[in-house]
Length: 239
Image (cartoon, rainbow, N blue to C red; front, side, top):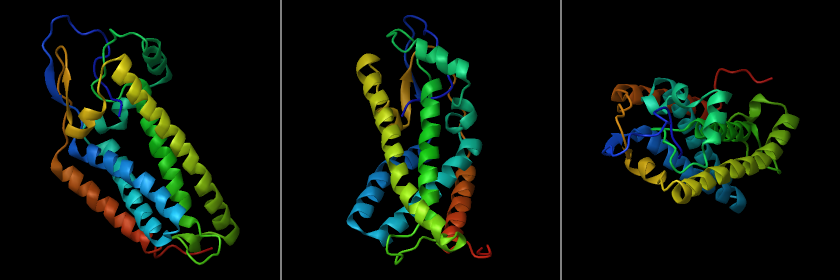
């Protein structure tokens, strides 16, 4: 992944690199889980393993709910406020993108932050459509199919298939950015997402961490809401 708030100007010459914890375990767990689940969802849909596909989709719902929660209550680099920047910051970042001497953000950079938000949005739309869709024969239904009219469920299935291509496009852009950074900037963006830390030149304050109880609370809330959805949202009247 690309990265968040932190100094983006040139670093002092000769400064010793410092090992800084950038990504907390919860961000990394969510990230790599989605990396595995998105192709698994495509494969199970293509092979017709719809019951497995449904279960994996519900897992994605839980991960997204937790990531949204963590975007407000999590560690500094996980919070949306730290990496969702305005147009001015994005334009300024893109103007200096070709410079090999440009400084680096500690977390998501101004452009990368929006790519992460776009990816979460695309996956969120995808699973939302999947929750109300049914298969072509109407034999396999999703947890919330009963809450929408038949025509809406049919349309949701069609759009569920189409939105997948949007996810592929966003992921491809994301991978292209990682490759660009590796060769043009000589910066490995994958390693910090695996181990959590990176080497940063110059005086950089370590991003603020979040207490473990917040992650536990978020996991419980996400799991509970996902379980309620998987049961068909009992208590919500059908139209």
